[in-house]
Image 1 (cartoon, helix red, strand yellow):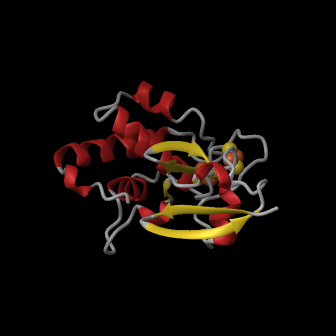
Image 2 (cartoon, helix red, strand yellow; image 1 turned 30 degrees about the vertical axis):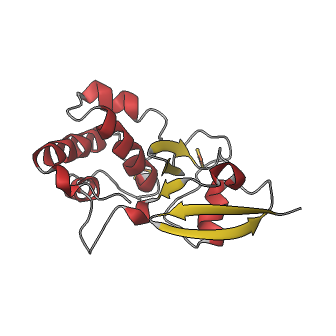
Image 3 (cartoon, helix red, strand yellow; image 1 turned 60 degrees about the horizontal axis):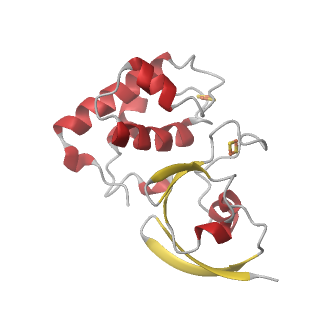
Length: 164
Ligand code: FES
Ligand code: FES
């Protein structure tokens, strides 16, 4: 039996009928075509599927679409606005916080939450805040640098935050 869900994703509200077992990550990728949210494991370990659900970072492979009924979701596609990259996207770009880029959408979405919780984070707070996100390529050093730089920009220009 299918269930009707109404979910607001990146500011757009739609209703679909879904299987009760459909995961939020598959809803985003396969139903809405938002493939910026990645799937890197099937064990809830990698964090590549991280999105914001009602403002909190969640691994979207651990949430059923029906559990997101009525929720507001922000994916990596919702961060940039009017052609302007979010300061985190800009900083990952500038500080080489990515190589293959597979982990990057999840890293950035987890970092949004991290910077809400710690607007002026230490290296240790960044590493702790991102411990649920795995990167095979970068050694994490440049990711930490990128998050610190984005934190600085966001403290100086809070209006730069535009996630929907
Ligand atoms: Fe969700 Fe790896 S795909 S944690
Ligand atoms: Fe390749 Fe992180 S940049 S997995």
